[in-house]
Length: 478
Ligand SMILES: NC(=O)C1=CN([C@@H]2O[C@H](COP(=O)(O)OP(=O)(O)OC[C@H]3O[C@@H](n4cnc5c(N)ncnc54)[C@H](O)[C@@H]3O)[C@@H](O)[C@H]2O)[C@H](O)CC1
Ligand SMILES: [K+]
Image (cartoon, rainbow, N blue to C red; front, side, top):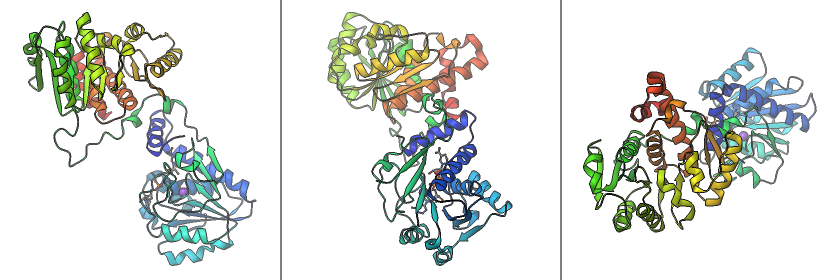
């Protein structure tokens, strides 16, 4: 089962793996033709009613695989309005091949298709690209199709139906059979008609490995204003001061609008000295301790996401403070470094992303393995056990929650230098302000690794954590 936005991401990941969309369309069209063959015999009259997007494109391909049928390919609207290059190329191929096509620019031309005399209709007007109720001429075409008792094969989803919900905002095609691609769609389950799920050659890697498709949805809304792209609080510092500053600066570079740092008064000036962009909130003492928890809980309540851990150290009273904080906090938090050991034993309503390296995973009570596939299984089991999202750093980063697992393959051995984990926590925290936990962790791992790869290109094994921060924006652009 796959939702439309995830399908689009997988589609883009497949392209990045070297399987271009046009190849996927060829496989989709072939699958449509195969289903038509199960419905009607060669020589039968098939009318393909096509839209101007890739759903129509699938049918332009199918027409080439039905040469032994009497096929008519009808496009609704002007071919010049075809919206994608791969659909247009397949339309053009039909013209070059002198295969019969018709252009329907007005609903009165629909009668000319004699749909009631066809032996099979292929509904390729709209698939996952539908927005709202069908407009003209698709609405009239849907009614004309429904008015016949000709068998209808719908491409990907009956036109007018929302692939995720199965609902239709307006008129929708009554399909007798749906051919959908790669995986079933949630909205198809509720329709009581046969659904063929066609494999179109998208490898599992396009879903398992984080890729460019996973970066979608990061666009900034034009009317956004300060604070729309996330406010975060880093709870860190004490024995160490670099770590919280790295996490905070990374969060800013990854797109957060405002980043606060709650830290012991003893290191506040030092942390502020790293960047004037950090809003530092000192609490008394030289380490995070239970007496500072109430102040920090109040600060955290005003933020979208908390990053708890960088540089806190592992003193007993600090871990007690972390435990007490998590017991009182019910928002979103990234937990990193020494604070991680608290997570398996704390009762919390917070939604956590834990970012251990493999040693910290063991300290948390988890298990690891050098073989990444075995490690992925172990991490998924532990994530389900603790009921939180895990991002376990390694040559292959493993991201898992109780539902799904992702692997990020970016990054390089130069990144074992100190501080890259703090940068990762900041990147994940920034993404967590606008994404679900697994997605924030997967994209964060991917981007951090890409920044590390860009840094490695220039500095080799001499790369340092701040090199990653400087390359985060470029890493998003890749
Ligand atoms: N994702 C994959 O792996 C593959 C998907 N394939 C096929 O591609 C379509 C999705 O194509 P897309 O171009 O994104 O959108 P559509 O063709 O579904 O529709 C866009 C088209 O429709 C117009 N439109 C939108 N809403 C309405 C409306 N309410 N009324 C009228 N017209 C509307 C819009 O203007 C565009 O022109 C997917 O379903 C698959 O069939 C690939 O071919 C194979 C791999
Ligand atoms: K369709």
